[in-house]
Length: 492
Image 1 (spheres, rainbow, N blue to C red):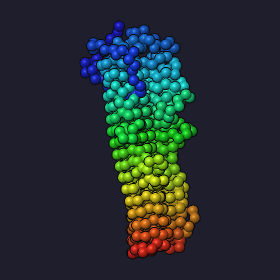
Image 2: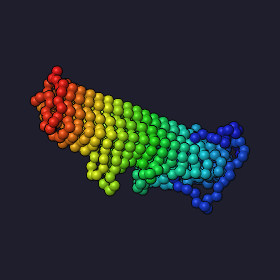
Image 3: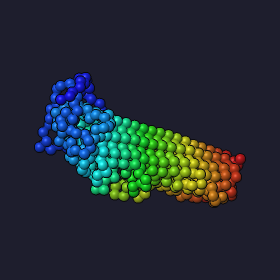
Image 4: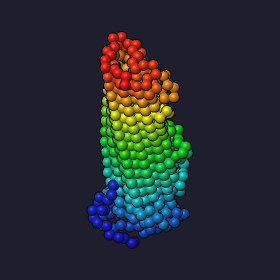
Protein backbone atom coordinates (compact mmCIF):
# COMPACT_ATOMS: atom_id res chain seq x y z
CA UNK A 1 0.00 0.00 0.00
CA UNK A 2 1.03 3.53 -0.71
CA UNK A 3 0.98 5.52 2.52
CA UNK A 4 2.01 9.08 3.31
CA UNK A 5 2.89 10.43 6.71
CA UNK A 6 0.58 12.65 8.79
CA UNK A 7 1.33 14.24 12.14
CA UNK A 8 0.05 12.51 15.25
CA UNK A 9 -1.96 15.63 16.12
CA UNK A 10 -3.73 15.56 12.74
CA UNK A 11 -4.58 11.89 13.11
CA UNK A 12 -5.86 12.27 16.65
CA UNK A 13 -7.88 15.45 16.21
CA UNK A 14 -8.43 15.90 12.49
CA UNK A 15 -10.51 18.84 11.25
CA UNK A 16 -14.10 19.66 12.28
CA UNK A 17 -17.06 17.40 11.04
CA UNK A 18 -20.93 17.28 10.75
CA UNK A 19 -23.79 15.49 12.56
CA UNK A 20 -26.71 13.45 11.24
CA UNK A 21 -29.57 11.04 11.80
CA UNK A 22 -30.13 7.50 13.02
CA UNK A 23 -28.28 5.23 15.42
CA UNK A 24 -26.32 2.03 14.96
CA UNK A 25 -27.85 -1.34 15.55
CA UNK A 26 -26.34 -3.91 17.86
CA UNK A 27 -25.43 -6.02 14.86
CA UNK A 28 -22.95 -3.41 13.62
CA UNK A 29 -19.71 -3.88 15.59
CA UNK A 30 -17.50 -0.95 16.43
CA UNK A 31 -14.11 -0.97 14.74
CA UNK A 32 -11.09 0.27 16.64
CA UNK A 33 -8.96 2.64 14.58
CA UNK A 34 -5.43 1.69 13.73
CA UNK A 35 -2.57 3.25 15.62
CA UNK A 36 -0.23 4.05 12.71
CA UNK A 37 0.47 7.59 11.60
CA UNK A 38 -0.29 7.15 7.88
CA UNK A 39 -2.81 8.26 5.30
CA UNK A 40 -4.11 5.89 2.64
CA UNK A 41 -5.98 6.10 -0.65
CA UNK A 42 -9.15 4.12 -1.42
CA UNK A 43 -7.26 2.82 -4.43
CA UNK A 44 -4.95 0.97 -2.03
CA UNK A 45 -8.03 -1.14 -1.26
CA UNK A 46 -9.07 -1.77 -4.86
CA UNK A 47 -11.27 1.23 -5.61
CA UNK A 48 -11.23 2.29 -9.28
CA UNK A 49 -12.61 5.83 -9.05
CA UNK A 50 -13.80 6.02 -12.67
CA UNK A 51 -17.43 6.88 -11.85
CA UNK A 52 -18.65 3.68 -13.54
CA UNK A 53 -17.36 0.84 -11.36
CA UNK A 54 -19.16 0.16 -8.08
CA UNK A 55 -16.53 1.08 -5.46
CA UNK A 56 -18.73 0.55 -2.38
CA UNK A 57 -16.96 -2.50 -0.99
CA UNK A 58 -13.45 -1.13 -1.53
CA UNK A 59 -14.31 2.21 0.07
CA UNK A 60 -15.88 0.51 3.06
CA UNK A 61 -12.81 -1.67 3.65
CA UNK A 62 -10.66 1.45 3.48
CA UNK A 63 -12.83 3.28 6.01
CA UNK A 64 -12.91 0.32 8.40
CA UNK A 65 -9.15 -0.11 8.48
CA UNK A 66 -7.72 3.41 8.16
CA UNK A 67 -7.53 6.41 10.44
CA UNK A 68 -6.91 8.92 7.64
CA UNK A 69 -8.10 8.63 4.04
CA UNK A 70 -7.15 10.84 1.10
CA UNK A 71 -9.70 10.44 -1.71
CA UNK A 72 -7.56 12.42 -4.15
CA UNK A 73 -8.41 15.13 -6.64
CA UNK A 74 -11.32 15.80 -9.03
CA UNK A 75 -10.31 13.04 -11.43
CA UNK A 76 -11.46 10.52 -8.81
CA UNK A 77 -15.19 9.71 -8.90
CA UNK A 78 -16.25 6.84 -6.65
CA UNK A 79 -19.60 5.28 -7.51
CA UNK A 80 -21.44 3.69 -4.56
CA UNK A 81 -24.69 1.75 -4.23
CA UNK A 82 -24.84 1.47 -0.45
CA UNK A 83 -24.16 3.79 2.48
CA UNK A 84 -20.54 4.31 3.56
CA UNK A 85 -20.17 4.05 7.34
CA UNK A 86 -17.46 5.93 9.22
CA UNK A 87 -17.80 4.04 12.51
CA UNK A 88 -14.36 3.70 14.05
CA UNK A 89 -14.28 4.53 17.75
CA UNK A 90 -11.34 6.92 17.36
CA UNK A 91 -11.54 10.06 15.21
CA UNK A 92 -11.11 9.56 11.49
CA UNK A 93 -10.05 12.23 9.00
CA UNK A 94 -11.39 12.07 5.44
CA UNK A 95 -9.84 14.51 3.00
CA UNK A 96 -10.10 15.22 -0.69
CA UNK A 97 -9.05 17.87 -3.13
CA UNK A 98 -12.30 17.65 -5.10
CA UNK A 99 -12.80 13.90 -5.32
CA UNK A 100 -16.43 12.85 -5.69
CA UNK A 101 -18.58 10.19 -4.02
CA UNK A 102 -21.48 9.58 -6.41
CA UNK A 103 -24.79 7.85 -5.70
CA UNK A 104 -25.57 4.90 -7.92
CA UNK A 105 -28.85 4.33 -6.03
CA UNK A 106 -31.19 6.30 -3.79
CA UNK A 107 -29.20 5.68 -0.61
CA UNK A 108 -27.67 7.83 2.10
CA UNK A 109 -24.11 8.43 0.92
CA UNK A 110 -22.26 8.49 4.25
CA UNK A 111 -22.87 8.10 7.99
CA UNK A 112 -20.55 9.33 10.73
CA UNK A 113 -20.81 7.70 14.14
CA UNK A 114 -19.11 6.64 17.39
CA UNK A 115 -16.39 9.33 17.44
CA UNK A 116 -15.43 12.83 16.42
CA UNK A 117 -14.75 12.65 12.68
CA UNK A 118 -13.87 15.20 10.02
CA UNK A 119 -14.73 15.42 6.33
CA UNK A 120 -12.81 18.01 4.32
CA UNK A 121 -12.82 18.79 0.59
CA UNK A 122 -15.05 15.98 -0.71
CA UNK A 123 -17.85 16.27 -3.27
CA UNK A 124 -21.09 14.34 -2.72
CA UNK A 125 -23.15 13.85 -5.89
CA UNK A 126 -26.66 12.49 -5.38
CA UNK A 127 -27.17 11.96 -9.12
CA UNK A 128 -30.72 13.36 -8.71
CA UNK A 129 -31.87 10.14 -7.07
CA UNK A 130 -35.37 10.13 -5.57
CA UNK A 131 -34.07 9.93 -1.98
CA UNK A 132 -30.92 9.75 0.14
CA UNK A 133 -29.06 12.13 2.48
CA UNK A 134 -25.53 13.26 1.64
CA UNK A 135 -23.91 12.94 5.08
CA UNK A 136 -25.68 11.89 8.28
CA UNK A 137 -23.94 12.71 11.56
CA UNK A 138 -25.27 10.41 14.23
CA UNK A 139 -25.85 11.31 17.86
CA UNK A 140 -22.60 9.78 19.09
CA UNK A 141 -20.43 11.64 16.53
CA UNK A 142 -20.29 14.83 18.57
CA UNK A 143 -17.77 17.55 17.70
CA UNK A 144 -17.57 16.29 14.12
CA UNK A 145 -17.08 18.71 11.24
CA UNK A 146 -17.83 18.98 7.54
CA UNK A 147 -15.65 21.58 5.82
CA UNK A 148 -15.06 22.68 2.21
CA UNK A 149 -17.36 20.00 0.80
CA UNK A 150 -19.84 20.19 -2.06
CA UNK A 151 -23.27 18.55 -2.15
CA UNK A 152 -25.07 18.47 -5.51
CA UNK A 153 -28.37 16.93 -6.62
CA UNK A 154 -28.90 15.16 -3.29
CA UNK A 155 -32.41 13.68 -3.06
CA UNK A 156 -32.90 14.55 0.61
CA UNK A 157 -30.81 16.80 2.86
CA UNK A 158 -27.19 17.45 1.99
CA UNK A 159 -26.25 17.21 5.68
CA UNK A 160 -28.46 15.87 8.48
CA UNK A 161 -27.39 16.29 12.12
CA UNK A 162 -29.07 13.81 14.46
CA UNK A 163 -30.42 14.39 17.98
CA UNK A 164 -27.58 14.44 20.50
CA UNK A 165 -24.85 15.24 17.96
CA UNK A 166 -23.77 18.35 19.83
CA UNK A 167 -20.98 20.75 18.77
CA UNK A 168 -21.08 19.83 15.09
CA UNK A 169 -19.69 22.27 12.52
CA UNK A 170 -20.75 22.67 8.88
CA UNK A 171 -18.74 25.42 7.21
CA UNK A 172 -17.49 26.66 3.84
CA UNK A 173 -19.55 24.06 1.96
CA UNK A 174 -21.68 24.41 -1.16
CA UNK A 175 -25.12 22.82 -1.46
CA UNK A 176 -26.71 22.93 -4.90
CA UNK A 177 -30.17 21.56 -5.70
CA UNK A 178 -30.62 19.46 -2.55
CA UNK A 179 -33.88 18.15 -1.11
CA UNK A 180 -35.79 17.73 -4.37
CA UNK A 181 -36.12 13.94 -4.28
CA UNK A 182 -39.53 12.78 -5.45
CA UNK A 183 -39.99 10.28 -2.59
CA UNK A 184 -38.88 12.60 0.25
CA UNK A 185 -42.12 13.50 2.05
CA UNK A 186 -40.82 15.06 5.27
CA UNK A 187 -40.02 18.76 4.81
CA UNK A 188 -37.19 18.46 7.38
CA UNK A 189 -35.30 16.20 4.98
CA UNK A 190 -36.18 18.34 1.99
CA UNK A 191 -33.83 21.00 3.39
CA UNK A 192 -30.19 21.38 2.42
CA UNK A 193 -29.01 21.34 6.06
CA UNK A 194 -31.10 19.80 8.85
CA UNK A 195 -30.09 20.04 12.53
CA UNK A 196 -32.38 18.21 14.98
CA UNK A 197 -32.08 18.46 18.78
CA UNK A 198 -28.32 18.96 18.66
CA UNK A 199 -26.92 21.80 20.77
CA UNK A 200 -23.98 24.17 20.16
CA UNK A 201 -23.89 23.45 16.43
CA UNK A 202 -22.31 25.91 14.00
CA UNK A 203 -23.51 26.43 10.41
CA UNK A 204 -21.45 29.20 8.81
CA UNK A 205 -20.16 30.51 5.48
CA UNK A 206 -22.02 28.01 3.32
CA UNK A 207 -23.61 28.53 -0.10
CA UNK A 208 -27.03 26.88 -0.13
CA UNK A 209 -28.29 27.24 -3.69
CA UNK A 210 -31.40 26.24 -5.67
CA UNK A 211 -32.79 24.51 -2.62
CA UNK A 212 -36.18 23.19 -1.65
CA UNK A 213 -36.06 24.33 1.98
CA UNK A 214 -32.85 26.01 3.14
CA UNK A 215 -31.48 25.44 6.67
CA UNK A 216 -33.62 23.92 9.42
CA UNK A 217 -33.03 23.89 13.19
CA UNK A 218 -35.57 21.70 14.99
CA UNK A 219 -36.17 21.06 18.68
CA UNK A 220 -38.91 18.49 19.12
CA UNK A 221 -39.56 19.45 22.74
CA UNK A 222 -41.08 22.82 23.62
CA UNK A 223 -39.50 22.62 27.10
CA UNK A 224 -35.96 21.62 26.06
CA UNK A 225 -35.66 22.67 22.42
CA UNK A 226 -32.48 23.05 20.39
CA UNK A 227 -29.94 25.25 22.14
CA UNK A 228 -27.01 27.63 21.59
CA UNK A 229 -26.52 27.31 17.85
CA UNK A 230 -25.04 29.72 15.32
CA UNK A 231 -26.25 30.22 11.74
CA UNK A 232 -24.08 32.92 10.19
CA UNK A 233 -22.85 34.29 6.86
CA UNK A 234 -24.65 31.74 4.69
CA UNK A 235 -26.10 32.47 1.23
CA UNK A 236 -29.44 30.66 0.89
CA UNK A 237 -31.41 30.78 -2.38
CA UNK A 238 -34.60 28.96 -3.33
CA UNK A 239 -35.13 27.06 -6.54
CA UNK A 240 -37.16 29.01 -9.10
CA UNK A 241 -40.11 28.85 -8.90
CA UNK A 242 -39.95 28.21 -5.14
CA UNK A 243 -41.49 25.13 -3.56
CA UNK A 244 -44.79 25.77 -1.72
CA UNK A 245 -44.44 26.84 1.96
CA UNK A 246 -40.65 26.60 1.74
CA UNK A 247 -38.56 28.65 4.20
CA UNK A 248 -34.99 29.96 4.10
CA UNK A 249 -33.84 29.52 7.73
CA UNK A 250 -36.45 27.70 9.79
CA UNK A 251 -36.29 27.53 13.59
CA UNK A 252 -38.63 25.53 15.84
CA UNK A 253 -38.46 25.37 19.63
CA UNK A 254 -35.07 27.07 19.44
CA UNK A 255 -33.24 28.51 22.45
CA UNK A 256 -30.32 30.96 22.54
CA UNK A 257 -29.65 30.91 18.82
CA UNK A 258 -27.83 33.46 16.68
CA UNK A 259 -28.89 34.08 13.07
CA UNK A 260 -26.56 36.69 11.64
CA UNK A 261 -25.27 38.03 8.34
CA UNK A 262 -27.12 35.59 6.09
CA UNK A 263 -28.45 36.35 2.60
CA UNK A 264 -31.80 34.66 1.90
CA UNK A 265 -33.57 34.94 -1.45
CA UNK A 266 -36.77 33.82 -3.09
CA UNK A 267 -38.66 31.45 -0.75
CA UNK A 268 -42.40 30.92 -0.92
CA UNK A 269 -42.97 31.25 2.84
CA UNK A 270 -40.85 33.07 5.45
CA UNK A 271 -37.21 33.94 4.89
CA UNK A 272 -36.49 33.48 8.61
CA UNK A 273 -39.10 31.64 10.67
CA UNK A 274 -39.04 31.43 14.49
CA UNK A 275 -41.83 29.14 15.75
CA UNK A 276 -41.99 28.89 19.53
CA UNK A 277 -38.47 30.29 20.07
CA UNK A 278 -36.80 32.01 23.03
CA UNK A 279 -33.70 34.19 23.32
CA UNK A 280 -32.92 34.40 19.62
CA UNK A 281 -30.81 37.15 18.03
CA UNK A 282 -31.54 37.87 14.35
CA UNK A 283 -29.14 40.51 13.09
CA UNK A 284 -27.54 41.80 9.90
CA UNK A 285 -29.42 39.50 7.52
CA UNK A 286 -30.45 40.47 3.99
CA UNK A 287 -33.58 38.90 2.54
CA UNK A 288 -35.47 39.23 -0.74
CA UNK A 289 -39.04 38.17 -1.42
CA UNK A 290 -40.93 35.63 0.63
CA UNK A 291 -43.90 36.03 2.95
CA UNK A 292 -42.21 37.51 6.06
CA UNK A 293 -38.62 38.64 6.29
CA UNK A 294 -38.81 37.42 9.91
CA UNK A 295 -41.74 35.64 11.55
CA UNK A 296 -41.96 35.25 15.35
CA UNK A 297 -44.59 33.43 17.34
CA UNK A 298 -47.57 31.12 16.96
CA UNK A 299 -46.91 29.24 20.24
CA UNK A 300 -45.31 30.96 23.24
CA UNK A 301 -42.14 32.86 22.35
CA UNK A 302 -39.98 35.38 24.20
CA UNK A 303 -36.90 37.59 24.07
CA UNK A 304 -36.38 37.85 20.32
CA UNK A 305 -34.15 40.60 18.93
CA UNK A 306 -34.58 41.53 15.24
CA UNK A 307 -31.90 44.13 14.61
CA UNK A 308 -30.13 45.70 11.63
CA UNK A 309 -31.64 43.52 8.91
CA UNK A 310 -32.66 44.52 5.38
CA UNK A 311 -35.88 43.07 3.95
CA UNK A 312 -36.45 43.73 0.25
CA UNK A 313 -39.85 43.04 -1.34
CA UNK A 314 -41.41 40.66 1.20
CA UNK A 315 -45.10 40.48 1.96
CA UNK A 316 -44.18 41.88 5.40
CA UNK A 317 -40.82 42.83 6.84
CA UNK A 318 -41.47 41.45 10.34
CA UNK A 319 -44.56 39.70 11.69
CA UNK A 320 -45.18 38.90 15.36
CA UNK A 321 -48.21 36.67 15.94
CA UNK A 322 -49.76 34.80 18.85
CA UNK A 323 -52.33 32.39 17.46
CA UNK A 324 -52.32 29.15 19.43
CA UNK A 325 -55.90 27.85 19.57
CA UNK A 326 -55.59 24.82 21.85
CA UNK A 327 -53.54 26.24 24.76
CA UNK A 328 -53.32 30.05 24.88
CA UNK A 329 -49.85 31.31 24.00
CA UNK A 330 -47.83 34.28 25.22
CA UNK A 331 -45.48 36.15 22.90
CA UNK A 332 -43.46 38.65 24.94
CA UNK A 333 -40.30 40.70 24.72
CA UNK A 334 -39.73 41.13 20.98
CA UNK A 335 -37.45 44.00 19.87
CA UNK A 336 -37.61 45.10 16.22
CA UNK A 337 -34.91 47.75 15.96
CA UNK A 338 -32.90 49.42 13.21
CA UNK A 339 -34.16 47.39 10.26
CA UNK A 340 -34.86 48.52 6.70
CA UNK A 341 -37.96 47.30 4.86
CA UNK A 342 -38.33 48.20 1.20
CA UNK A 343 -41.41 47.70 -1.00
CA UNK A 344 -43.33 45.13 1.06
CA UNK A 345 -46.53 44.08 -0.69
CA UNK A 346 -48.52 44.14 2.57
CA UNK A 347 -46.67 46.26 5.15
CA UNK A 348 -43.56 46.90 7.18
CA UNK A 349 -44.22 45.42 10.65
CA UNK A 350 -47.35 43.53 11.75
CA UNK A 351 -48.03 42.65 15.41
CA UNK A 352 -51.26 40.78 16.14
CA UNK A 353 -53.07 38.41 18.46
CA UNK A 354 -55.92 36.00 17.76
CA UNK A 355 -58.07 33.71 19.91
CA UNK A 356 -57.15 33.59 23.63
CA UNK A 357 -53.43 34.20 23.22
CA UNK A 358 -51.49 37.33 24.18
CA UNK A 359 -48.86 39.59 22.62
CA UNK A 360 -47.16 42.04 24.96
CA UNK A 361 -43.92 43.92 25.49
CA UNK A 362 -42.99 44.52 21.84
CA UNK A 363 -40.76 47.40 20.73
CA UNK A 364 -40.68 48.67 17.13
CA UNK A 365 -37.96 51.30 17.00
CA UNK A 366 -35.71 53.19 14.58
CA UNK A 367 -36.76 51.27 11.47
CA UNK A 368 -36.82 52.64 7.92
CA UNK A 369 -39.95 51.44 6.14
CA UNK A 370 -40.16 52.38 2.47
CA UNK A 371 -43.62 51.41 1.21
CA UNK A 372 -43.04 53.25 -2.08
CA UNK A 373 -46.72 53.17 -2.99
CA UNK A 374 -46.69 49.36 -2.92
CA UNK A 375 -47.32 48.35 0.71
CA UNK A 376 -50.46 49.17 2.67
CA UNK A 377 -49.14 50.20 6.13
CA UNK A 378 -45.93 50.99 7.92
CA UNK A 379 -46.60 49.50 11.38
CA UNK A 380 -49.84 47.71 12.29
CA UNK A 381 -50.66 46.56 15.84
CA UNK A 382 -53.84 44.57 16.50
CA UNK A 383 -55.12 43.33 19.89
CA UNK A 384 -51.76 43.65 21.64
CA UNK A 385 -50.63 45.54 24.73
CA UNK A 386 -47.54 47.26 26.09
CA UNK A 387 -46.26 47.99 22.59
CA UNK A 388 -43.90 50.87 21.80
CA UNK A 389 -43.63 52.30 18.27
CA UNK A 390 -40.72 54.71 18.49
CA UNK A 391 -38.62 56.75 16.08
CA UNK A 392 -39.53 54.95 12.86
CA UNK A 393 -39.42 56.56 9.41
CA UNK A 394 -42.34 55.50 7.22
CA UNK A 395 -42.58 56.58 3.58
CA UNK A 396 -45.55 56.47 1.19
CA UNK A 397 -47.88 53.79 2.55
CA UNK A 398 -51.03 53.19 0.53
CA UNK A 399 -53.01 53.51 3.76
CA UNK A 400 -51.91 54.39 7.33
CA UNK A 401 -48.36 54.95 8.47
CA UNK A 402 -49.13 53.58 11.96
CA UNK A 403 -52.39 51.70 12.55
CA UNK A 404 -53.54 50.56 16.02
CA UNK A 405 -56.66 48.49 16.66
CA UNK A 406 -57.80 47.00 19.96
CA UNK A 407 -54.54 47.85 21.74
CA UNK A 408 -53.96 48.86 25.35
CA UNK A 409 -51.14 50.75 27.13
CA UNK A 410 -49.28 51.57 23.90
CA UNK A 411 -46.92 54.40 22.98
CA UNK A 412 -46.39 55.93 19.52
CA UNK A 413 -43.62 58.51 19.66
CA UNK A 414 -41.00 60.30 17.56
CA UNK A 415 -42.09 58.71 14.29
CA UNK A 416 -42.08 60.42 10.89
CA UNK A 417 -44.79 59.48 8.39
CA UNK A 418 -44.60 60.73 4.82
CA UNK A 419 -47.50 60.61 2.36
CA UNK A 420 -49.95 58.29 4.11
CA UNK A 421 -52.66 57.24 1.64
CA UNK A 422 -50.15 57.83 -1.11
CA UNK A 423 -52.40 57.12 -4.10
CA UNK A 424 -55.65 58.31 -2.47
CA UNK A 425 -55.06 61.73 -0.83
CA UNK A 426 -57.30 62.86 2.07
CA UNK A 427 -58.44 59.27 2.70
CA UNK A 428 -56.15 57.69 5.33
CA UNK A 429 -54.50 59.19 8.42
CA UNK A 430 -50.80 59.11 9.18
CA UNK A 431 -51.47 57.63 12.65
CA UNK A 432 -54.84 55.91 13.11
CA UNK A 433 -56.07 54.55 16.48
CA UNK A 434 -59.23 52.41 16.45
CA UNK A 435 -61.07 50.93 19.45
CA UNK A 436 -58.12 51.20 21.81
CA UNK A 437 -57.41 52.46 25.33
CA UNK A 438 -54.53 54.18 27.10
CA UNK A 439 -52.57 55.11 24.01
CA UNK A 440 -49.96 57.87 24.12
CA UNK A 441 -49.19 59.58 20.82
CA UNK A 442 -46.45 62.15 21.19
CA UNK A 443 -43.83 64.09 19.25
CA UNK A 444 -44.61 62.61 15.84
CA UNK A 445 -44.24 64.36 12.48
CA UNK A 446 -46.57 63.83 9.52
CA UNK A 447 -46.55 65.43 6.12
CA UNK A 448 -48.04 64.85 2.70
CA UNK A 449 -51.66 64.29 1.67
CA UNK A 450 -52.98 62.25 4.60
CA UNK A 451 -56.46 62.98 5.92
CA UNK A 452 -55.24 63.60 9.51
CA UNK A 453 -51.89 63.55 11.24
CA UNK A 454 -53.52 61.64 14.14
CA UNK A 455 -57.03 60.16 14.15
CA UNK A 456 -58.52 58.56 17.29
CA UNK A 457 -61.77 56.70 16.81
CA UNK A 458 -62.78 55.93 20.41
CA UNK A 459 -61.45 54.80 23.76
CA UNK A 460 -60.31 56.22 27.10
CA UNK A 461 -57.04 57.40 28.61
CA UNK A 462 -55.66 58.85 25.37
CA UNK A 463 -52.89 61.45 25.07
CA UNK A 464 -51.89 63.30 21.89
CA UNK A 465 -49.10 65.83 22.33
CA UNK A 466 -46.27 67.39 20.36
CA UNK A 467 -47.62 66.47 16.92
CA UNK A 468 -46.24 68.40 13.97
CA UNK A 469 -47.85 68.29 10.53
CA UNK A 470 -48.23 70.01 7.22
CA UNK A 471 -50.36 69.57 4.09
CA UNK A 472 -53.03 67.45 5.79
CA UNK A 473 -56.17 67.01 3.75
CA UNK A 474 -58.85 67.60 6.43
CA UNK A 475 -56.94 68.64 9.54
CA UNK A 476 -54.22 67.75 12.00
CA UNK A 477 -55.94 65.95 14.89
CA UNK A 478 -59.24 64.07 14.84
CA UNK A 479 -60.35 62.96 18.32
CA UNK A 480 -63.39 60.77 18.95
CA UNK A 481 -62.29 59.45 22.36
CA UNK A 482 -63.43 60.55 25.82
CA UNK A 483 -61.17 62.72 27.98
CA UNK A 484 -58.24 62.77 25.60
CA UNK A 485 -55.34 64.99 26.62
CA UNK A 486 -54.44 67.28 23.69
CA UNK A 487 -51.45 69.61 23.95
CA UNK A 488 -48.79 71.29 21.80
CA UNK A 489 -50.07 69.93 18.49
CA UNK A 490 -49.05 72.39 15.77
CA UNK A 491 -49.38 72.71 12.01
CA UNK A 492 -46.06 73.64 10.42
